[in-house]
Structures are given as C-alpha cells and as structure tokens.
Image (cartoon, rainbow, N blue to C red):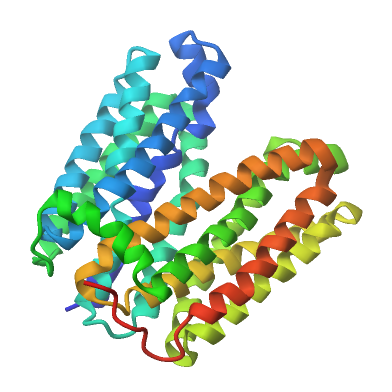
Length: 390
C-alpha cells in the first residue's frame, strides 16, 4: 500500500538519485585545476556520466519487470553510493571519468521507483502518483546544480560528492526500513527480457505513438536549452550566471507536475496532452519573438518547461495503464527515446543557430511542437489504454 509517508520517501529517493547526474557540471573548472587537465578534457567527465545514464536506462531499468524491486533498488542505491565515494577520491581524470560513468549507469533509480509507486497504489490515481514522484525528480535536478556550485565554492569539488554520499546513505536507510517487497510480474530470462523491447515498442500503437511523440517533444526541448546561452549572450549581453537563473523554471515544473497528473486522472489523457502540448507551442511562440524583449524569454521558458514535463507525466500515466508486467520495460522505451529526441534537438539546434540564428532555431521548435500536438493526441486513449503485447 502506498501511504503518504512512503510516497514522500519515494519522492525523496527520486530527488536525491536524479541529482547525481549533474553534480560535476558546476565544478568542472575546479576539477580541471585540481587534476591539472585542460577544461576541454574536463568535459569528458559529464559526457561519461550521460553515456552511463543512457546505458543504465537501457540495461538496468528493465530488470524491474523480472526482479523483486526492493532488493534491486537497494542494491543500486548501495552501488551508486560507492561510485560517488570513488569520484570523491579520484586521483586522475581517468579514475573520475570511470566513476562518473558508473554513477550514470547505476543512478536511473527513479525509472524503477516510478512504476513501483504506481504498483503500490494499486494502479489507482496513476497520474497523481507519477506527478508527485516526478516532482521529486525535478527538485533533484534543480537543486543539484545549485548545491554543487555552492558547496564546491566553499569547500571544494570533492565535498560535493561526499555530501551526495551522505544523502544517499540517509535515503537508503529510510528505504531499507520502509520499502515493501515488490515481486516481479514477469518470469523470463534477462536476454529474453531485452529481446522483448522491440516487440513492446512496435507491437502496440499506443506505446509506439507515445514514444514517437516523446522524440519530437524532446527535439523541441533540447533545441531550446542547448542554444539559450548563445541567444542571451548575443542578443542581450547576458552571461552564464543569468543562464543558470533560467534553470530555476524547473521549480515551476516541479510544482505543476502533480497538477498535470491530477488533471489527467480527472479529464483523461487526450485532454491532458492537448492542454500541455498547447503550452509547448505557446512557449515556442513566445520564444520566437523573444529577442525583442527579455520578458518573452522568461514567459516562453516557463510555458515550455511546464508543458514538456507535464507531458511526460501524461505519457507515463498512459504507459502505466498498460500491463503491469511490462511497466519497467515501457519506462525504458519511453526514457530512451526521449533521450534520443533531446540529443537530436541539441545537435540540430546548435547547427541551426550557427547557420541561421535564433529564427532558424525557433522554426525548429515550432515545427516540433506542431508535429507533436496531433501525434500525441491521436495515440492517447480516451479512457482505458489497450493492453500491451505479451
């Protein structure tokens, strides 16, 4: 049974574990100076963590369908804690890159916690549960850069990792005491488990549609955040500190994610998709005229972020309405395809900025939002989604 206390602990788990992905970004300069490497070489470290994260989503998250989720989550928590300690002790770039890869590989714990929360709730109010847990995830993403920068400035970059070790231990102890056993629904071997992923993706139009739409929404999201610093610098003369302040809009997303979940539970996925993707489209409309007034960028950023993260709540609620035996694999497919969309948007956005400036980037964002709107609405079920293939 999912009590309020356990929900809070699971949300805290999502917050603490998701924060591990971005710890190194604010302290890269300190890392480069301490390890006596160039700033370009230091960029390998966050890349290694991101690559590990993608690998963890693809290879570890599906285990939640064939393993008891309690020992799986606890084992990943313990292993991530050890990887964080290894990063804090790293004497060289190679050591730190390897530790960063391990942190990324082992830290997709929220992607296992989310379907577990839905299962413990008995499948009821799935949108509400997903919204709360994703709110915790977003708080972690928001806080990680802020506290890593502050701690690194005061007592050094290694202390950032030791603080994360302490938080992981605290949350791990709470999970050890409160997390119930969650036996698997599926009984197949690991190689066979991975072979089912293409079938789950291609064998059900709801799954395929949600994942395809997530790619397009990811393009709209990645194109913005990868070019924001360029346009703020060249159009308004604003530096990295102000760019970092724009990241605070994630706070609005964290607050509105539970609202998106409740809205979807009450009015259904189609209306939820329509409302949130209209926000994405309106966000890019405001951003397209942004260079004329900085306020348009603030408005557009808030609308885009709320729309994108709220859309994720709706998508996961739809997927978690399918066969519970497939929930972790469906989560794997969703986040892996979303990651591909964000990566593609980042690459295309940077190239379009170089070739055509903000007008070209805005055209990409508007096009992606316009394509995602009918695609997501058409695949969203009116009431109950069809079962996923076995």
